[in-house]
Length: 142
Image 1 (spheres, helix red, strand yellow):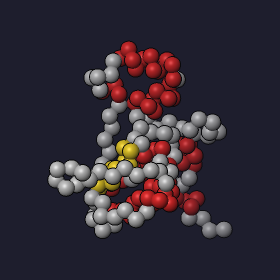
Image 2 (tube, rainbow, N blue to C red):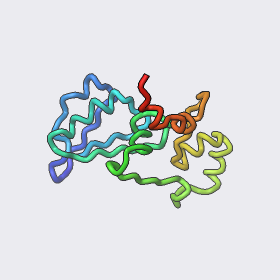
Image 3 (tube, rainbow, N blue to C red):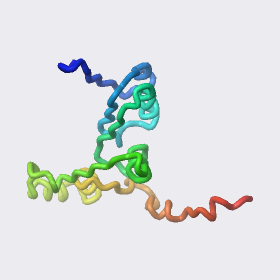
Image 4 (cartoon, rainbow, N blue to C red):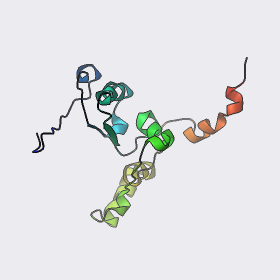
C-alpha cells in the first residue's frame, strides 16, 4: 500500500488463478517476452473498466510471442522505449565485451542490445518467411 492509497499487487504466472482482479489503473507485465500468451490474454481484461495503462517491460526473447508482435507490429498503439546496455553509464565496456565473448553474439545482441534475434534452432529466418507473404497471394481464391 502506498501513501496515496494505491497498491501494488504481484500475481503469479497462472492464468487460471489470476482472473477476477479488476479496476486496475496500471498493469505492468514484467519480463513480458517470457510470459505466456495465455497469461497475457488473462490479465488484459483487468483494464476493461478503467481504461488503464498497459506497460510491457522486457528484453527480447526471439521473434515470437505477444511482446515481439506488439513491438514489431503494434503500430502507433504502443510507445516504445529502447534502452540498450551500451547506453547505461553504470555498465562498463569491459563487462559488455566479456559478456559478448562468453555468451555468444546472438545472446549478447538480445540481452544487452535489445535486438530481437531469430529463435535458436529455427530452420528459416523469420524475416525471410514474413517477406515471402504478399497481399496478392492472400487474395487468391482457390
